[in-house]
Length: 112
Length: 113
Image (cartoon, rainbow over all chains, first blue to last red; front, side, top):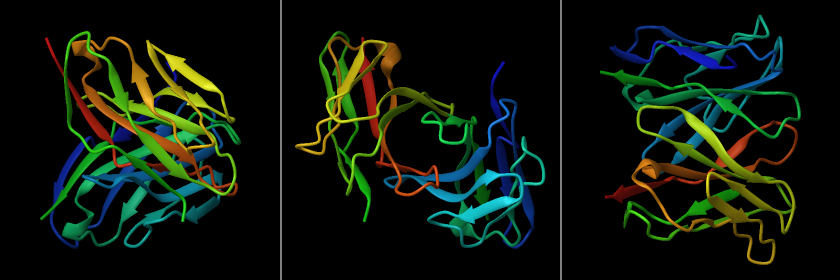
């Protein structure tokens, strides 16, 4: 089954404790992206990757890092989480130039 | 800058009622337009899309027409069901080759039996 998976689905952590949210897709897509969803703001792009070893900032990259060492994986790293990073995070993927993006199920993060 | 604006929710309808969710966008060109749906506890799924002016996207009884004159992409359905209860996001393709989607704030639809 074609899918985008994220782990964990739910996470409660404390300020300053490094964490990683994993994202993996099995569709051999070149393009991957991270979004955060906040009430009243819709989804905003954090980082994206056009292919392996090619990443770039989206609209709200502060406080986040990413890496793309393999085509299928695109982890989101929070080196020192803060409460304003409490949000619902979505990973997405698509073919290069493809119109349709496929979204993961989301990771709900609470930073205390 | 580039943006997408949706009507405020929540929208509450009775089963079999007609649905319209308004969406307008700003753009210098003619970006592809999308409607995504998010069912409770799930990720976003593409509902329909239109890639050029005057195109009509349709799926599962939902329709939206790309209107460049009014820069709008309103979502409609003739007869909603309880199972249509979800959050609906209008989105446009971002400028350049970033693959970015620019989303509206989302509209919650609740359909009552």
